[in-house]
Image (tube, rainbow, N blue to C red; front, side):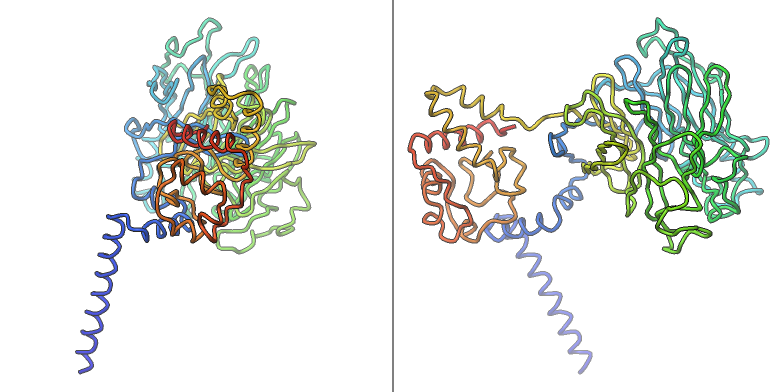
Length: 563
């Protein structure tokens, strides 16, 4: 009998599930009122995350910043890559953005619709030799991550007597079965102004730096930690290249010993390399995984680096400074245990402190200086991130961070670069190039609307004041319902139908559409129109102003956007 009860219970639960699913289908298919409520709850709790799962190829046309929106155009290069991986770098040459992919190809991009592979071949980094060694009987017992063995950065530099391309990459030495960071340069003649005029074979590059010593395979975690190479480069005229030399996880936890504090090795350091003499020297130590280097307008060198669990850092690099890794950090091991041998856990009181640290980590990647993108951004540093899938705009005043603004992109951003024409270009771990242009929040739609009407000057002024009052809460961007329903796309829409998540029950229950009659009634007395509404009385007591406001709402819906 007990078994029979279990069957009855199971069938009952199954029947309830089918009824629930069928009811949801009917409600959604026929767009019954509960579907609007459920949709609002979904957006409130999940944002548009479920939309992106349902349609992963859909991307917003713009992203939001505090002073402007970033219009976006993107292109995928996935089909052009020869193997799985992530990494690479961006630079500008002439009117093209040059992309160095992790597998060593160089593309020229002038827009999302104009991307071509160049005739520039890069030096062999020994990838095939590394893979052969890894699969041999001698080393196949170790863990290998081929996707992180990569080319790391590309830079066009120009100064009197020095003009060329520089690249950095992890290089495998098959004679000694070891690896290192390497920098190679390709001279570019002064008369060469277009990437179409450039071509190179692997042997045309000049290897000007190889990190010392050549590191052996590790038997902890991955044998070769290419993701900890750093490898970002920056140029200071007339002839200095800076290289962020990561420690490749030789930190005493993922390798037998830590080397960032060892003055006899190049790893875990910021290096200075002279293009003419080829001399290299350590200018800063105690560095973990430097993923971004940038010079500001005052010539200060800034660096961002990955911490472990917490402790991503922004550092002002000055010659002779020791930044503490792995003796000091603001993070912990991924196991949540303290870093072995750490001298001041969570304090960073003995070595040079970071200017700023992200706790928890955002998984920083690249760093660039913005100039000429928008006046509200000029002189700010822009940092890309992986885990947080965002850009961070960093304002520095008097050697301190005034603020960081997070701009969500919803992509793991490997590199951010500002092109010579002002556009921002992103390279993502999903192998996309994203071009961003600024679109300031301005009143051009409002002013254009008023200019198009034959209103007398006094009425235009009163209308502008009234519309500006409405916009204290309501956006005229059709997709922006953050504080109140948008005023765009309102005319002829069902009452309470926007994807605003906090409608009053009074408006949710109201039937009908927004037209001249309903809008006039609502704006004249919201409480009488929908008892219990949270909309305050707007105070429009002039019929000509009321008609002008409704004209504006109709125009905003007809044009589809007020921005």
